[in-house]
Image 1: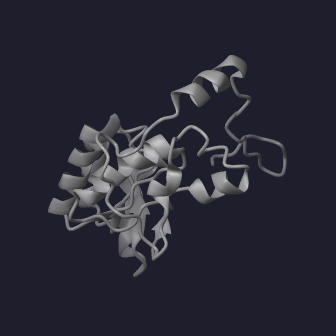
Image 2: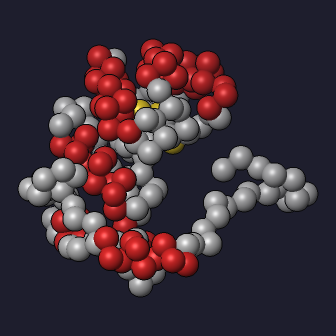
Amino acid sequence: MFIEEPVLPEYTDHFGLVVQSTSIPIATGERLFSRTEFKDVLRSGIAVAQPDLSHAAGISETRRIAAMAETYNVDIAPHCPLGPIALAACLQIDFATPNFLIQEQILGLGKGNNGALMKYLVDFSVFDAPNGYIELMTKPGLGIEVDEKAVREASVNGHRFRGPEWHHRDGSFAEW
């Protein structure tokens, strides 16, 4: 489908060369945070922009990035490695974006982990995809209902999640 993030975000000025060097579509953007950062990358000829709504200032800025990408004939595949609230917000953008390609999500991983990501929703069936796609949500707002009692209960203990650390063979830190 595409090669994702072949260049670190601090070297986005190299995307033109990467795009010219291959016939495989190039995707990037999960570590870019604004229209300003996307502008030159879109001009470089990438095929797919991957804004992360949780990093790119929310729904409005991500929608603006998608609209700007459309003017360059670039599809969007929003990056969303987080939970159901972020996914619901991404889906609202997807449903309203003509150049939407595909939605990254990890909710299947949550179900395999005793439903850890889903336990904060009253009804997580809104994310079912029996035919390979999620239907347009019909509830108000993001289309989900948060189980506030479950959130309050979980907040008592907090959580121990920490982002992964990547290391080279010699033990030095590496980019993810």
